[in-house]
Image (cartoon, rainbow over all chains, first blue to last red; front, side, top):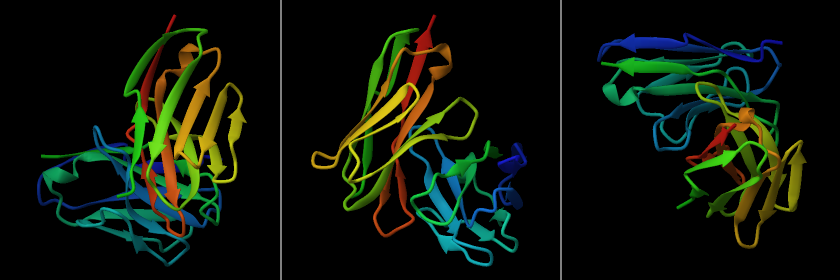
Length: 113
Length: 112
């Protein structure tokens, strides 16, 4: 089991560029989440999904879009990157209810110039 | 406003010593409280999950306690090891939501 994997590990973007972060899990989890982690702040939920084909907004969704076309994949898109989106992005997954353990990926470090 | 506050911000201890990390929260009602360990450059790893009805939960040398009346939790680390050097994050799940509220963490450094 690879667990939760994230691609890429690190990326530098120029303001206005777009990109997609890929999260994949091989644990057959229903729930998947995207978080961002900034210095001095706790992780904040961007978007989440409770099953294939479903997505919902979290705490800080502006500037991001997501898709869950396949159960094992959760994509996070930045349509027009801004310096404020410089952060470390973590994907997580969990089984099928909110009491279950969340398993986190290794993170993607994004720098927007 | 739902908040999770942790103390201390950072802590340095000698290998073999015990330590206790604190978490105070204002989330109400809450579903469960979690402690995570996050090594530098890695994703958080779950240590314990407690519902409001549980007072204590152990995972090896890690023991978490919860006082739902005072809205406080602690994580006690026994016989610390160098590999315990990491950030420890307290997370509270608001009841009826998918909103996990993360504390900013306590950065622990264990010295030989």
